[in-house]
Length: 422
Image 1 (cartoon, one colour):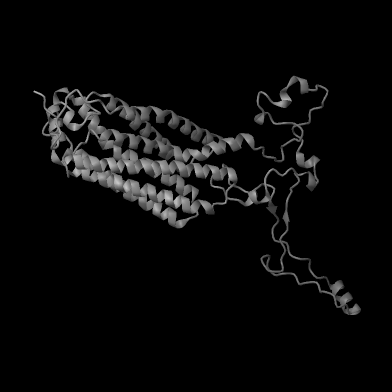
Image 2: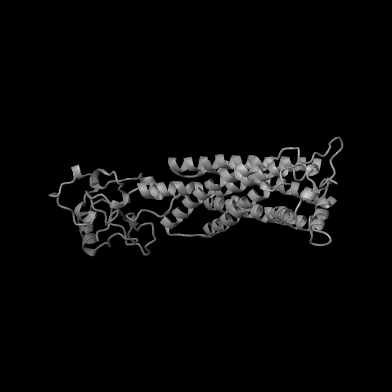
């Protein structure tokens, strides 16, 4: 005799094998997000390889990338299983298997850690971007701790409330799922799930508003500003997904339908985790573009000889019709500064203000190597002959100032220079 996994609510009858599956949106979302994640992760890793500099947030990104891909890929066979994608009262217990029940419980347990690592990675990236804002950094750390406690509470509650009882067979898994604390209306599992979704939505909304407030004060270029606005747009989508997850968890709590509303919840989780992986990768596209398009002029650069590093296969200089074998090739060891000493010949590629900008999206945040300064230089010492001549002539002109006692005195002089001959 057919037995539903959980009794239907009042006014609803169980329909076994006749209702359509709801799992198609989750499978389509997972298959669409995985290629985007791989593409963004490849750009992030390539930018780090070009920069030759790895930080803590890069290692955190790689670890979160692995567990997030496993989480999204794990949802595909879970939703493809026959009992999944139906309302809880339309699932016949005779068609259930122990592996499916174990996969369903494992997916629910690991939802909390995956969300926490993805949230921590986004906060670490935003703290790196707005590193000079003290209050944002402190609130970011508070959000990491608070969300970690809530997600950990959800994991522990699911593990205890939905665990198989009293044994480890299929009937024990079904009895554990049928408990009021696991899938019943007002149960601890569903209540903590709503609390987790609420805290998750509030954290996303706060991060979105804080970045909107802080982004106008950033001293960045126009192209970097476009990257920031793209991050804002993606953050809005992530906030919408977290709000939708909260709405469907509330509906599941009211109707006691843990499997029927699990499909839109999984779709919201997949989108939120995927977007969390894409946000730190937005600046990597600009970094790669800047690396291959911006030509840095230094003391080893030779004017008139294009660098093969920035040439393409369709370059003007590689065309046979424009190649003159009689043209002498400049010596690559000749320094540009030794042959062009005039200031007017300096080919400035960036504005002077660029040398003093601290861009959080740039690969190298250092000042230009040409902008150097000499140590403090005092004014010349007043000689005895000059003092005698001034007394004899009785001139009323300005007197020679005394030599300062310390190099940091107001009488000292600092001479900035632009070039250095080598």
